Amino acid sequence: QITLKESGPTLVKPTQTLTLTCTFSGFSLSSHGVGVGWIRQPPGKALEWLALIYWDDDKRYSPSLKSRLTITTDASKNQVVLAMTNLDPVDTATYYCVRLYGSGNYEHWYFDLWGRGTLVTVSS
Amino acid sequence: QSVLTQPPSVSGAPGQRVTISCTGSSSNIGAGFDVHWYQQLPGTAPKLLIYANRNRPSGVPDRFSGSKSGTSASLVITGLQAEDEADYYCQSYDNSLSGSRVFGGGTKLTVL
Image 1: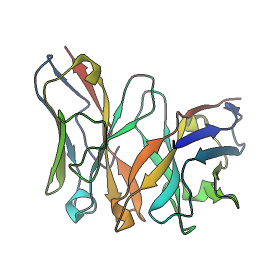
Image 2: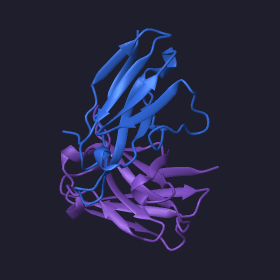
Image 3: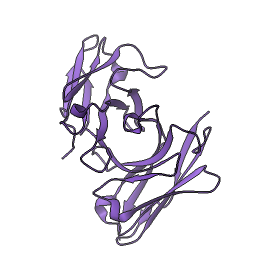
Image 4: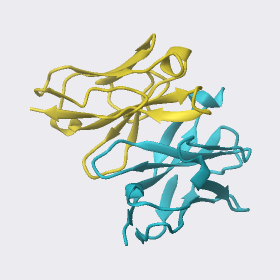
């Protein structure tokens, strides 16, 4: 069974750095055709892709947030960490950890599995 | 403002057929990149519904179907059921935005 689970603070003050951890099981990030990423959803609003790390350690970021984001994976590759700097109340959202999966060109890969999400509130 | 455009809402009676459109541009759907669809039931995480334009993951009923043409894609739901009431999102890849994964703004489906 494949699972992804997000963990991290539920409340962050403005200007602080948010660090979220995705712990996954049932697959390896070392396997070709796999990536792990983050997507967020402000309350009542649409989904927004944030960042991805691929099986070969290649990393991609949303252009609008690239300067604030860092995605990393641990040595055992069953955790992916997202750091977001300089938090603002507009960053209040549910943050989802997702698995990216596919074959062929990576542009065609899709988010086949999602964690339950974790709500992060940015407020003083 | 989402890169992919979806109608904010659609509705239909049980048993009817509804279509949700997803309009992009020459840098995403029109460039040949696949479109994927996700279903988000109230209070839950999104779930993959259709991948690579028209493929259903295991367990997704064949009442759900997808297609793509030009710079647009469509999700069709036939034999509408009450449990289909949810938000639906399309997603693709955009090569004008440093390789971004882009979403539509979402469509709320109401079963009357």
